[in-house]
Image 1 (cartoon, helix red, strand yellow):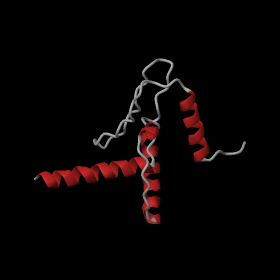
Image 2: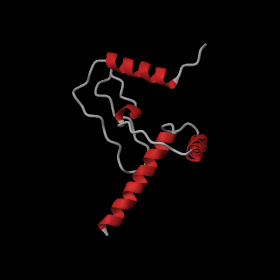
Image 3: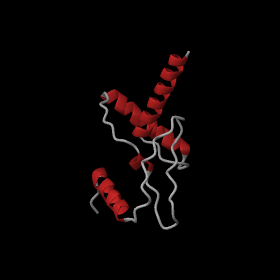
Image 4: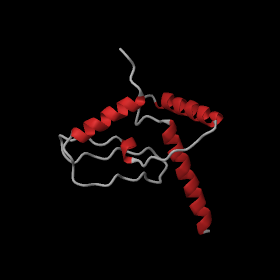
Length: 113
């Protein structure tokens, strides 16, 4: 069987979500600034599937050096091995969101002193 590309899988998932009955008008949730893993939004009814967390985030592109990307990939793999399937999968994007949260937390802490 031919292996699907990530873009194809995302398109299929988005298509499935569009076919599902639309819930009340709701804005996507913003990621909390706690630095922890974000839980997926709860479904409103029993028959509805909640949105996957990655579809609730705003897309922002970032260019990384090859050594940064390699280190992020290695760290994400190591953390996923250590968690042994418990909780949400940790991706490079998860680590980037954590890093941004830490940076913003430290920057705002210095500005208030």
